Amino acid sequence: DVKVTQSSRYLVKRTGEKVFLECVQDMDHENMFWYRQDPGLGLRLIYFSYDVKMKEKGDIPEGYSVSREKKERFSLILESASTNQTSMYLCASFGQGEAGELFFGEGSRLTVL
Amino acid sequence: EDQVTQSPEALRLQEGESSSLNCSYTVSGLRGLFWYRQDPGKGPEFLFTLYSAGEEKEKERLKATLTKKESFLHITAPKPEDSATYLCAVQAWNSGYALNFGKGTSLLVTP
Image (cartoon, rainbow over the protein chains, first blue to last red):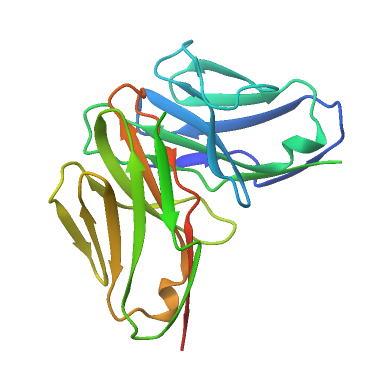
């Protein structure tokens, strides 16, 4: 079974702190994604990566950065957390040439106080 | 700009009462339309991918269909364990494999 693992299920941080959300997949997928999910707004794409060291902005990249140093790992970084970044963060991966399933992790619920 | 609209936002059914969820979309070059199920506090779980108008896929009590403008998720004789949020998403050829999601339909099935 494909597995996408997010390192932290629940985090509580203070305004201004630097936050790292880690995601690891075990299926050698080229493409990885970070979404955030908020009530009434659905899932919105923050950043994605189609290869090691490559990254592309999604719909809402402001306030975020990403890092992809290894194929299996895709990190989301909040340089200076703010209260409006309180959300559920979902990582996903997708393999080129496959039938077309985007695999999601269990999510990381971040609260910024 | 790609758009995905799901309706209704919420649906309450009695056990055994069949119904359909709608997903209307506009996209510049559809690569695939996806349906996911999401339980509270968990990541979305893949259900179906549809690629071309007229295509249908089934899994247990669920059946997904696709036209050029919309997709339906038909739920036949639902059970309480079918209660979840159902998400629709489109993938365009120029999206780099990213999915654009609708806001979901929250389904509650009561005994």
